[in-house]
Length: 133
Image 1 (spheres, helix red, strand yellow):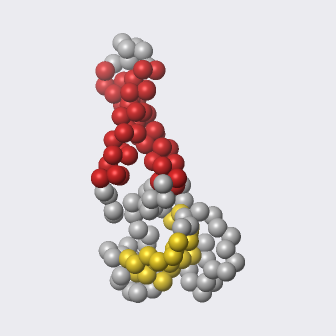
Image 2: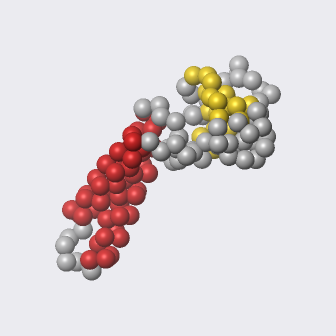
C-alpha cells in the first residue's frame, strides 16, 4: 500500500467536506447525537469514495494498492512499472512475471497479447483490478 501525504490530504479534505455538508442538511435535534454523527460519517465516506476516484483519475495518480500478480498469486512487495499512462507493464518483484495494467478501458490492438492483462475497476483509487486477458 502506497499511502503518502497527498493521499492523506485527499482523504481528510473529502471526508470533512462530506461530514459538514451532511451536518448542514440534517436538522439539529431531529435525531439523537450518535445517529447524527453516524449519518455525517457515512456522508464523509461516500464523499471521499466518489471524490477521490475523480481526483485520482484526473491527476493520473497510481492506486493505493498494487495488483495481485496473476503469475504467482501474491501481492508483490516490490514492483517495477514501465510504460506510459493509461497502459503500464508491471514486473512482479516475487516471480519476475510481467503483466499489463490498464488504468482505463483501453482497446489497444498493438498491446502484447502474450501478457496477462488487468484493468482497474471503480473506485479507482483503491486499486481493485479485474482480469481482462
